[in-house]
Length: 396
Image 1 (spheres, one colour):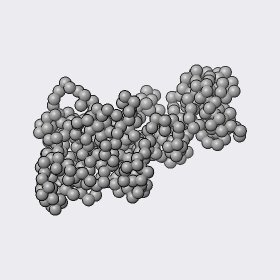
Image 2: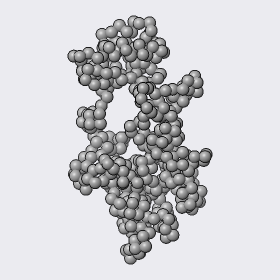
Image 3: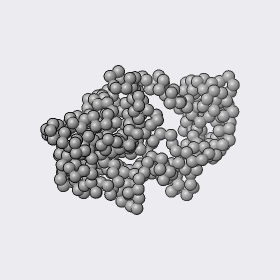
Image 4: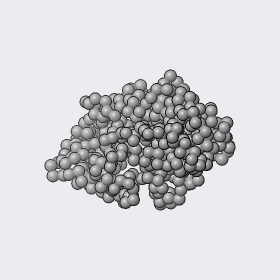
C-alpha cells in the first residue's frame, strides 16, 4: 500500500483493545507508532491467554503490529523529560487513561494543547469525558450491558448474551482513528485538536436503529435471536445439515424467495407487504422453515438455489469455515508470514485497500521493550544515558 500517513509520528499511551486497535489502524496506514508500555509488565493484553501462539497472547498479537515498544515508568520523576521529547516529535497522541489519571500525569488535553500547538490529541475512554461515570473503568462486555446491546442479543428463551466479538472495543478504535484522520486532513487551522471517542458513545450509536424505534413507538425491544425487527423474512432457518441466514428485505426479494422455494406464500394476503410479514413473522417463519428443512436438501443446496435467483443468503459459518472460505482467501485478507518469530504466524490485515493494495507489515507485534534503546537514541539520548535510565528503572 502507498502509505498515506508515512512521516507521521503517533505516540500511543493505550492498552487493552480499543486504543491499540486505533493505533494499529494508523500504523497500517503508514504512521510510525511508538507504543508506551509499563516496564516489566507491558500492555495488559500481553497476559490475556489462553489462547496463545508460541507462548504469546493472541489478543496482543492481533492488535499491535506496525508498532515499536518502549517501556517507560510514567510515574517516575525523570519520565516527564522523555515524554516531552516524544511529544515534540509527535503528530498524534492517543491515550486511554482514566480522566483523573491523565490529569495527574499531565497528559490531559488542557495540559498539552498550548505546549504542542499542532498536536492531534485523541482520547479513548469507557464512559466518555464528563458526567458522573467518567472515571469508571469499562470493558467491552460492561458497555455491551450498559448500552442495551445485551438486552436485545441472543435467544429470547436464554440468559442475556454478550455479542461474541468485541464490537464496541473495535468500533471505538475505528471511530478514534477516523476522528484523527479527519483532523489531519483539516487544513483550516494550525492549532492543537481534541478527538474523543468512548465505548459508551459507540454502543449507543450501534443501537441507534432500535433507539429510534423506541423513541417513535415507545415499545422496548427484547432479545431477537437472528431476527431484524423491521423486515421479514430476515432471520436464520435450520436446514437438514446446518443453518442458513436469509434476508428478503423487500417485496421483490420475497417473491424471488417464494420462487426458489416452489411456494405460493407470496399470494397469501397476510404476507403481501413487509409490514404485514413483520406482523405475522412467526407464522411466516414456520411456513418457510417447513419448506427448508427437507431431508434431501442441504444448506449448500439452498444457498445455491437462493443465490441463483438473487436472494441474499449465507450459510452460518464457523470461524474455521471463514478461514477456509474461497471468497475470503481471494481477497487475501488473512495473510501468512515466514519471517516472524512465531512459525506459521497468520494475521487478519487492515480491511481496506488503497489503489488495490493492502497494508504492509513494517513491524511485527513487538516484544516487550523491544525498541526502547532505539527510540531513546532517536530522541538524542547517548548510550551511557540510556544505560543510566535503565539502571534507575525509568525505562527498561
